[in-house]
Length: 337
Ligand code: GDP
Image (cartoon, rainbow, N blue to C red; front, side):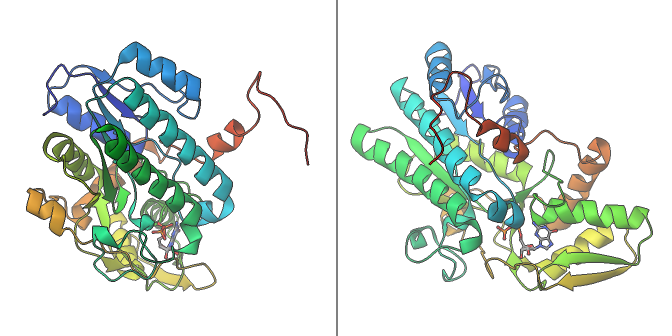
């Protein structure tokens, strides 16, 4: 069954990069009953608030695009935040979608759920066949738990909860924080600032040799609507471009798009993370969906967004989560061990 123009559709994480792209795509498609409370209106880590919301609004379709996300440095610095908040968000949303009889839920995972040394390109069935990349293991374990939550509700209760695994994403509303963001927005900012300052050199973390695949977030949003409407099958579905490049190649494209004229230096004392994570897209392509935005076009669009917003976008930053992990008013406070 497809979403109708008046279906009640909840986009969890609607102010983040992925959720806001899904909302734009839904609006463009003529959907009118969109539910997208901000995190200050609805804290998805608060179980009773999420229950109240679902019982009041009874969403029929749920895009679970809310997550605490960050780059390689943020994952190393805030592992407890990444695992705790993501498990809470997923449990609360998925349980409430079940309890209020949602027609369908689409859960968004990540390509980091696959084993570090998985054969490339990575097929969906390689999930849980080997050890994870240690730099983002707590985040990946939370996302794997989300997949298993969906599958378990489907098996036990006959729900229609499907999971999509996007590759590395970028686009409007990205997190341009130089320390906590992912590589692409971090480089957009660093090369832009270097170009402005006419600096001689820009430093890129790691050896430049790891390979990554990048998908423009509006393409992901299009794939999410496609899967929500067309895919009821079992099993997770990879979403990407099927093409990857080295971090050095990525840096060269970003440098060119922002007009930086100096040298690029690699700081091998910073971690490389997983050597490669290219997704196999046979399943998605066979279903009938392909991306349309090339990397250079997407980076130019993302750079336009960066210039418009000055890199100050709301998004799901890590800082807000640190504050949230403080005891809530009225919550039982356990004495320190
Ligand atoms: P990952 O795909 O989960 O490893 O996450 P990231 O997007 O954080 O990092 C991808 C790769 O880009 C890693 O090899 C990083 O070392 C490299 N990289 C180079 N410069 C940067 C930077 O400024 N920020 C981040 N986050 N990564 C960088």
